[in-house]
Length: 335
Length: 268
Image 1 (cartoon, rainbow over the protein chains, first blue to last red):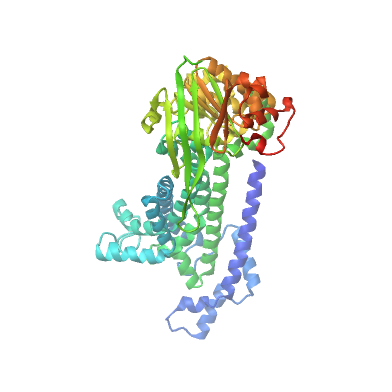
Image 2: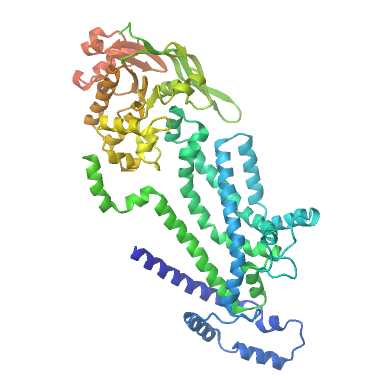
């Protein structure tokens, strides 16, 4: 147990270090100049620009700057965001609060819909329902999520006026002031858009696994014992498709994060994905690095959760893992 | 034996599978051409034939679990009644049961006890059956992958007996078992038959089957070509009519392992 925790902590630290170096290097070679991105349209003299650069410490070599930044991070100081003029941790905290609601809803929704569609398609394999679901999945898989987002905007908010165009709360109102209903109506379209990215993969994967289960010997045996198809699906099918589902769905957290950047941009939803785009475009290195590290931890935890959950849920791993303990019990059973 | 009630009567069963070759050309693959067999209460019938000769299809046809591309003709009667989907709905899993051949017929992620109970059995029935087959109570809480070969065999048998089945179809019950386990399985079948059930055993192992069977039905090339009693078979070559059955007899280890020199000898 301790070995597992230490191993994974070391692994994560190593990953964070590599990611931070690569991100820093990429920001460094990117053509965006932080100072000119910051001053934008304002008429600023060369001298003033020099002063800003000096103030931000941009005149030092990249290696020195990285080391300084890393030292501060190790002391718990992620620096100050240049565009929001706030502590990086504070910005991430605020933004993540909004994003996690969006991603969480989309994640749960795509999981449930995907699982349901996959099971239905497999159970009616080769029939109309199966074909319809497959076509739907292929369409979904081949359309980019930002395009789906725009389509939803055109239909539901421009034409039908059912949902707002963007933001997380009505204009002129902060999120904390908005009512639950208002917040939900602002969430609906982004959640739907984001969930679409996951559905088809989960549906097709679940369908494939379920077909395997339905063609298994134990499915034949269940049928020979007079169990109905849907009875079998609920009794044996679900538990057998659940393991691959957990791996896939927890492993898809990274795609969810990537998808949220697009979805939040389309719907101007003020979450972490939006902040990522802003910080990158405006050369806000501290914030950008902060978000990158944060998302790395987030995705790492998602994958770790998948591994742990599968080990807990699968009896072959759970009870096969501690052979020493079990062999004693086994002797008793066979005797 | 004859005055006992007939449990299962299969007459002129033929099964073929519709297959698609390149493009849309259809081909029917005939697996069973003409199969007739009958089974009475208290009787063990062994359908013997080479591996891959389509014997299992017989059991699947009775149970109605053939794939959807199967074409079936002929008559299957259970206690004189034509076997229909309606009848299967009522009797499968309770009166008509199948004993599968290996651990793959168990759900790998469900505890054994719950699987033995199935959807129709109770906990008491399961515990009683476990006791009868010398399975410890803990086995009910084990997963299939934790069972030894012999235990798996007994667990599979218990799935059939918990509900007091009348017609038991056993599909290749012995492959992969050691001699001891195989003989024990035969003993179990004999006991079930002596208690009034009818056991139809599908096997390629004549030697083991003889331990329990009353009647041997020889299946070859999609047809039942011969039928004889255990006594006839044990009596030896002279008591057997069909050349193939004689060849089967001669091929047994205790009868000298003789394999006919040419096909003509047993073609008949």
